[in-house]
Length: 307
Image 1 (tube, helix red, strand yellow):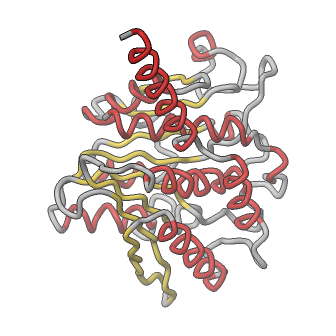
Image 2 (tube, one colour):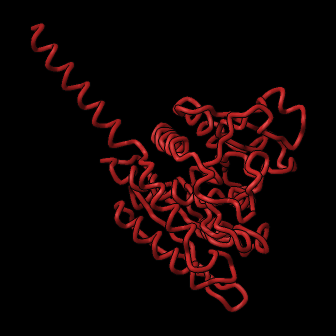
Image 3 (cartoon, helix red, strand yellow):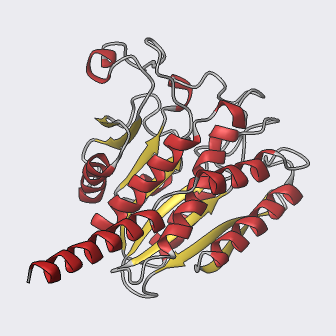
């Protein structure tokens, strides 16, 4: 009996160890995606449609390799065609859970953190979801275009186009998570800034965490996901909730889903409140911490499966 118990225990431990290995984000794969995204012939901004099309094709290939059902959502702006790329996992019917990240950049910069990290995280999340034998509901991973100026806060944002399509088709949506800059960390004192100075007393002055940002009365999904993310993460997480008018709280694609009444939140390294390379040519790959980026992705997977 003792021998049998020992064998069963060993088998269970091996199974858990194997599952952990399979379900961990790979820093080498994250780097591979980031190298591709930051070395396109021209910056992947709204002026270089051919480059954006090439990136969209790359994203589609990676999602298919992960096992996703891939579709594109093309739309026209000022006579040019832009496209969202969607990778679906799990059942084809039923409510959808949306995870998104924008793949365009602002002006002429490589955009490693903004938002190469969110896009790379989305692709690595796809690989991890593809390893799941059965998902209880449909999860759509959406890579958006035109999040950056001059289209931010306009109906031309890729996320607005996607959210509106769900609303117009009466698609049931459980909730939405946006991955917006997840690769820049700074352990030095005073490295973290805030839109409201007293927040430092609550959240600290070291930029060493991911924050889960949601608005007041932001819905059940955002509340539950942020809690599960905090519990699962192997790096510090700060859960932030505040009024929608607070500067920075709506600075990404989750804004589009709020517009249509969906429960949505943002995961971020806080962008320009920490990363001084934001929207500059110095937003490059070597500035990033890929180990902590991988930990951030692992927590997304765990929270998705928990919620």
